[in-house]
Length: 225
Image (tube, helix red, strand yellow):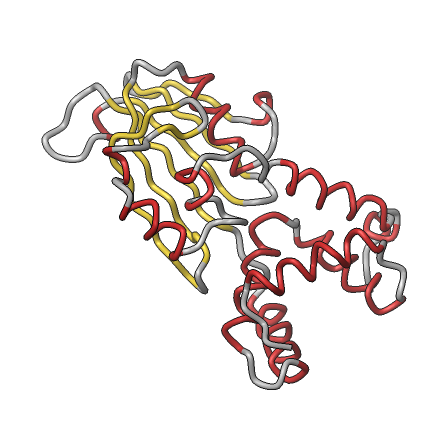
């Protein structure tokens, strides 16, 4: 049984969420696009790296990245670690991270511990943090870097299994593509909204624009039918 608050959602809310996310996909450079939790994939990342990587393009929404590490799962970013100069202000760092985490500046929990500036945001698209000081620089320690991290959120295990199993059956065995679509959902759609979207599909009340967006994700994930 869905909670009362979920029943108060409408299909228009889902459409707004999708439009908000998709609008954030416009105007990105190739680096930002390659590591984006929704639009990024290993092929785009390899193409960016082959064209020079950080040596040629290191601008991440106004923050210059000096080093990074990406962890992939189902051809989607599951964890992103980046390092940038402390010459960038904390506000600039938060603004850049919000492009992949969502939320507003006021949503961040900020603290100063042991001389380090720490920011943390647990949003609908993932868990994001930044840390300024020697903890963020690796070895040898220094005080000239921000460490920025993004970690993707995942839906409950049983929900993930059910989705992939059902999708695999209806798509005639395209498990990898099903996992890719699920990863896209997890990257931008809160679990509660995902449940409502599922109900709307069953009821046949999903707006045409939302169906169009879902079809685009199917194409990006390589479905053959």
